[in-house]
Image (cartoon, rainbow, N blue to C red; front, side):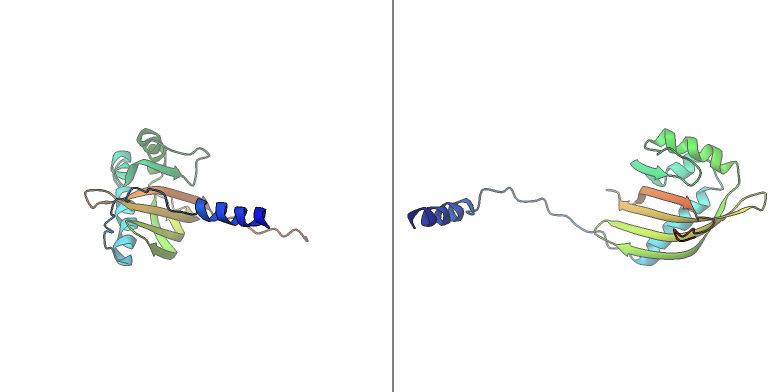
Length: 158
């Protein structure tokens, strides 16, 4: 019985609070879903310019997992390299479906879009844009994933 009492006493003493530094206060930048939706329009309009214009939509440490590239683009130069080739196709995007979620200084816009290229070809794709509010209040893309829609679903029973 004494051992049991000691174990309880030890467990209780381990649960006592320890010194914890106060967390810095965070101020959440208010934003509406329509403002987040407009960020796609800003990005899409930059596709008619040059790779540097598109690149200005991205945070410095953003991750780009692009539709027609098999390598992650983790630097400004790597993202601009991707867009040098992509912009040559003269792409214009149109949102087909979307869901926007807003957090504290972050937002996610995910859904489907269709790209029409200068030669008339169209590609349907799934996308996710994750945004963060920069210190100056500008919203930037922190991650962007895009993948072409599967041509057909194959079930394991066929």
